[in-house]
Amino acid sequence: MRDDILEVLISENELQDKVSELGAQLTEEYADRFPLVIGILKGSLPFMGDLMKKIDAHLEYDVMDVSSYGTGFVSSGEVKIEKDLNTSIEGRDVIIVEDIIDSGNTLKYLTDLFKYRKAKSIKIVTLLDKPDGRQVDIYPDAAGFVVPDEFVVGYGLDYIERYRNLPYIGILKPEVYQK
Ligand code: PRP
Ligand code: MN
Ligand code: MG
Image (cartoon, rainbow, N blue to C red; front, side, top):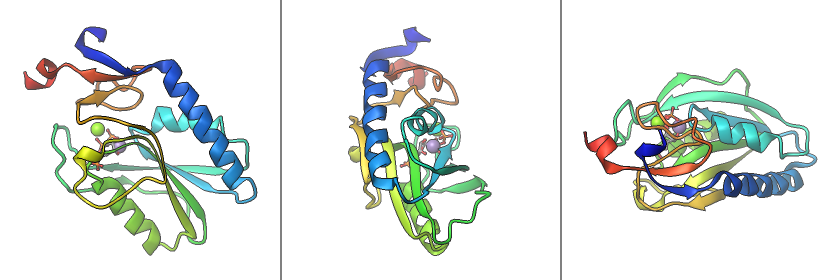
C-alpha cells in the first residue's frame, strides 16, 4: 500500500495533535449545550472516532451516509442520501464532521437540509479543506489543514474504497488512478 503513496502529506502525529486541538476548542464551545455530532460516512469515520474522544462534554452522535463521487474520480455535483439520520435535529446544536471539503457540494446540500429541518445551529468541522476544488460557496467553521489540489488518501479518504485505513494523509501516485 505504501508503494502507491507519492508523499506523506500529514503524518499520524500531526493528525493526532490537530485532533486534540480541535477537540479542546469544541469542549470549550459546547460545554453546556449537549450538541449532536453528525459524522458523514464513510470518509469521516476515523476522524470522528478520534475527535469524539477529545471532546470533554456531554454530546450525542449520529451518522449519515451520503455520496457525491460515485466510484470514480471526478465529483458529479450530485448528492444522494444512502442512509439518513435516526435522530431529529429540530432545535439541536449540530456539529457536522467531515474528512474533506472539496467541491463543497456535499456540505452545501447537508447544511441546506439541516436548516430546512430546523437545526438551532450548524457548525462545520472538517479535517481537510481543499479550497482549489470549490464549486459552491461554502466555508468550514473549523478546518484542521488546508490541502493542495492533489489526490489525497488515508485516514478515511479513499480512492475506489482503498487507502481509508492508512493512519496518515498521503498523496496518491498519479499512475495509480491514471491506469
Ligand atoms: C467525499 C468526502 C466528502 C466529500 C467531499 O465523500 O468524504 O464527504 O466527498 O467532496 P465535495 O466537497 O466535492 O462534495 P464521498 O462522497 O467520496 O463518499 P465517502 O466518504 O464514502 O468516500
Ligand atoms: Mn465523504
Ligand atoms: Mg469517496
